[in-house]
Length: 210
Image (tube, rainbow, N blue to C red):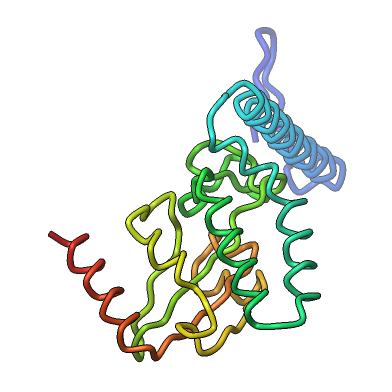
């Protein structure tokens, strides 16, 4: 390697242990600088996302307030001593949560180890709605989300022991494998075999598709 100076040229042996050590240290310094830059980028992004989430005054921001209510509601549901009471609680929960928007699939942010929803809310601090899936035939279900599908309101009002045969629950980790981030708070599966109720479901689905 030639080291050039305005006054002279020196030939350096790159195989020298001293030179090799110098090059290794220089490489490590460069790597450390990249890590510091990455951390700064992550901090800046987190601050921006926090500012956006704090400044926005929309119903979407309110999803951050669902963590506590979801936990409290699940406790009430678990302690309910009859299927009728459980279905009444489910009705109330679906209607109450209709003001909240269900976030779309999360997008990665530059940090690499954090995620943000498409509405720029930090996924780590915001909860999502508990999902309620109604199965009316083999392999056929609808989500009872009155924010997305307000036309399903009559179906929610008729969630009773006569129309609903069984209720099962998947926790967040299992629900996320089906619904992605939207399943983070868990999903309740309601199954019906009531023919009249099924006809009403099919009629609403048909009207929605027109």
